[in-house]
Length: 278
Image (cartoon, rainbow, N blue to C red; front, side, top):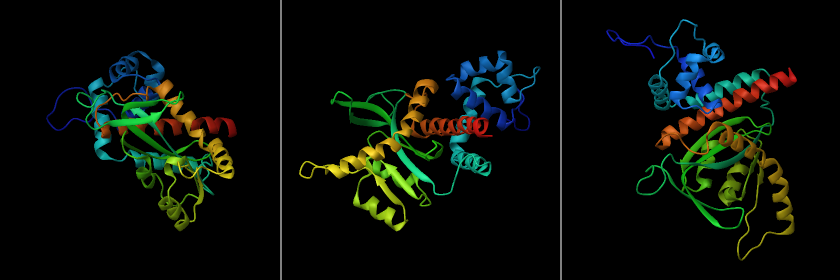
């Protein structure tokens, strides 16, 4: 990062160089220390970050400070929007008749537990595949994607915050259809969709005294086929990019990590679409 007047030390690095380094760290699941080492010895890493062969590489501390600066700027959502606008201009992302698919996944906190864990996280309880209650200390990471799997917005909450409270943070009202699971099923949400002329594809919820009808169950299955596309994104991020668990303490820093992952996902997917469809 640029040095102030009178300061000494290493030369500063362009913001784009540092941002590209963050993307490489994401895509290769590298800590800042390992990323620094890889930048020093890998010619392809240097080329991607636009570092000359005789140029030094950013230290782990420099990369970390840049990430914190991005966090404090609060402008990563603007970066995501701008990338999507460029992909849209190249007809990679289609804006006409856009479908919104909203879902969430749990990112475990860097340190777990109520007493010694990340104090900004929360306990998220869900029923696992074996029908047993399972709790994780962490955060809920939400995305709004289109049918092709491009991410349009993200938000992050403590694990114990109800999902329905995060829906409005993900939508801007321009969507023509909303796919979501039964956690978002409420009259308030249905009224909001009607007011914004958004087609309701939210799965219905059954209750003890009012079971789902055969028609509603069939509707839920049909919606689930489209809604399930988001699981591939979460699975990829957790399996290959280390997003199953936060590297950092605190909601803001964990959200920054997730926002970079969303940007990295769209860039990779956009490049793949351009290769496939020219």
